[in-house]
Image (cartoon, rainbow, N blue to C red; front, side):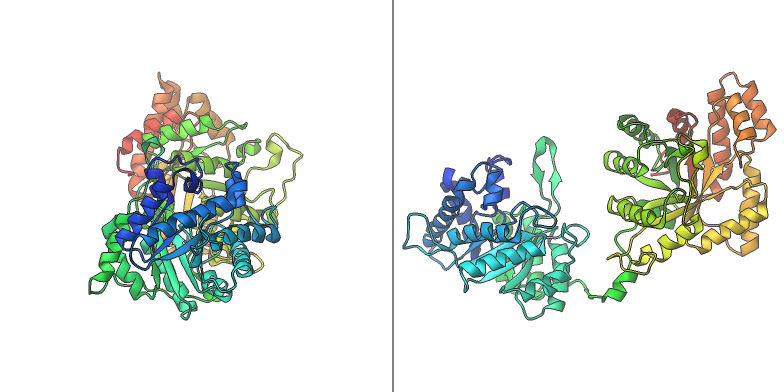
Length: 614
C-alpha cells in the first residue's frame, strides 16, 4: 500500500487547519504528484485523498455541500495517475472517522452516521467527476477507527451502496494498546472479523513494533481472515514552530517489512509520518530475497480470568525507584484555596529544579476546603513533569465514592497513593460536615493491592483491567508506644503497603532504634521508608509542634538551638540537614513538609543531595 497523505500535503505547504481533502479541488496537480511518488516508490495500491471527505468533517471548513465533488475529484486524479503509470495499481477509497461521536456517547444516531458514510462511499464508487468512462474505486479502506459501532455503520453503508465491493476495516490504538474508546486488539478479531469485510487491520497507532505485536493478537484469534498493517512512523513529536515530526526512518520500515510478511500480514503500508521514501525502502526489502532479522514478538492471548490478574502497564517511576533502591526526595504541597493553580505550579517547578523527584499532594489538609487533590496532582504531573503521590484519606468517603475515585485517579495517570484516615472535619472549615467512613486505611490498602491491582472491585466484579497503584501508609518512627506502632506497621505490610511516609523526625537516634526493633521483631527490614523532614521556621514554630501536634516530639536541645538562633530559618534548615544526613544510610528517601508553604527552605535542604537523586 502507499503511505501518509496528510503528512506529505502539510510538508508541501498546506496549512494544518485547512481541509486536506479540499486540495483535490484547489490543487489537483499536488495530489497527483503525491500519488505518482508512491507508485514510483513501489506501491501496488494507493488510496484516494478522501480520509476526511465526509459531511461532518467538511462542515468544520464550511464545505459540507461539496462531499460529492471532492470525492469524485479524488477518484479522477488517482485514476489519471494510475493510467499513466503503465502498470497495474489498485485504487482504494479512503474512509476515515466522521469526527463526531455516535449515540450514546454522542448525539449522532447510527442512521445519521450510515447516511454520511453512504453519501461519501456512493461518490467514490460512482467514478471520476466528469469522466463517466472511468471506473470508481476497486476497494474500500475504512481506517483509523476507535469505535466499533462506527465501523459497523460504515460497513453497513458500504454494503448498501456496493454489495460486492471489497472492504478492509482498520482500527488505531493508543500507547496502552487500546483504542481511544477502550477496545482491546482482540476486538479487531472477535468483532470486526464477523462483519462483512474482506480484511481487518491496524493503521496509525504507534510505530511498526507496536503494530507488529498487536497483529499477533489478531492472527491468533482470527487466523483465516487477511490482515493489513499500516503503522505511523513512530509516535509524533512536537517540534519548535509547531511542526510535527515522526522519528522512524525509511530503513527502519524496510527492516519491518519482512517481519510483517512473516507474521502473516497480507497488505502492508504506512500511515502518519511515512513518505514515498518509507514505501520505497519497504518495496526494496520485500523484493530482496531473505528473512527478517528482527524476529517475531511472542504473543499469547489470555482469557478473561488470566487478564484479571495480569499486571497492567509500565510501573510508575516511584515503583521503579523503590525497586532499584534509588533516592526518593518528595515534598508535600497543598492544593490552592481557589481555582488559580499557578502558584502551586511555580512552587513545583522550583522544587524540581532544586532536586525533588516526586511531589506529595495533600487532600484537604487540616480539613480546610481546597481544590480537589486529584486536579492538583494531575496539573503537577502534566505541567511540571514530576510524578505525584496523591494523599487518599478514607474519612468522609463511602465505598462507592472510594472506588470511583480510584478509577478516576488511575485514568488521569495518578498511580501513587498515600492512604491515611484523614483529618476530622471538626477541626476544619466545616465542622458540621459528614465525618463517617466505610473502610480504614489498612482495609483500603488491601482493596487496592489485592483487588483493584488484580482487576476486581470490592464485590469481586471485573474493572476491565488491573490497576497499577503503588500504595503508601503513615508511620511514626518516634512513637510513644513503640510496640503498638510496630504491630500497626506490620499489619499495613501484610495488607500490601509498598512504602511508608513518616511523621517529621527530630530525634534520629530514636528513629534508628525503631527501625532496628522492627528488624529484630519480624526478622526482616521494614518496608521502604521515606523519613519525614520538616525544617523548623522559628522558636515559636518548634514549641507549637512539640506541645500541640500529636506524635511530634522535639528534643530540648533542638528547641534551645532555635531559641538561640540569630537566623532561625537558616538554623532550621541546618537541623533538617543534620537529621537527614544521620538517617540517609537507613532509609529510601525523604518526605519534606514545609512550614507555612516556605518551599524555598525545603529547597535549601535539598541542596545537600546535589544530583544524587537523579
